[in-house]
Image 1 (spheres, helix red, strand yellow):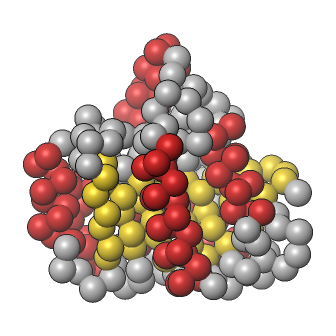
Image 2: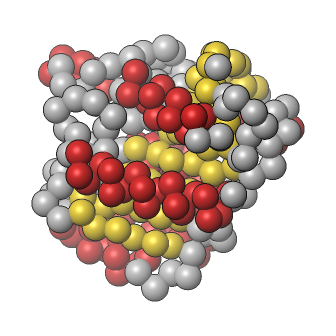
Image 3: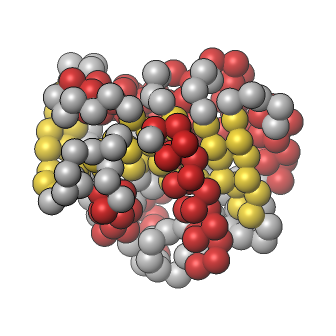
Length: 232
């Protein structure tokens, strides 16, 4: 069962729309699916539906709700890709982490699900890293997170498990950024990094031209094992 809900913002500046996919029985735990810059589009809803089918409450918040609510873009369409880049430039990730924290608190208080993790993609991957450093989320996974290399001074705040999937040919996260991430996080006791040789940004998209089937299946299997381990 799926629906769209409104989650009260902890910043008291409105209600965060979120796509919610529910399992058939009592949820084992909850997973926040943090979108790319393309909104809660069919691919993100499909990811949420997959988690629900595995017994989790899945919540995909509209991260652009403050200035572009309800957008659904296709990264394979150049005009829509450029539109998404424009939204990315407007986005305040610090406000976005409050949205993730708002979802965590809503899940625990209203949905009565105690264990909460997240899986974020692109900008959502950055937010997954920030959530690990700034909230009490139980476990976080980031796919091809952007600009994490600019926030490595927050790594010492990471108290709960974090996994990052890093495609080595990511044209948005270059070799120097990847090297900085490894240098800062390889020895972190709460962080697990996985490299994907030769793969590019977006390789684990549910659909479209960016998907690499073998890479997506490998990363997703690692994500599921990781979240099962830490969430149940």
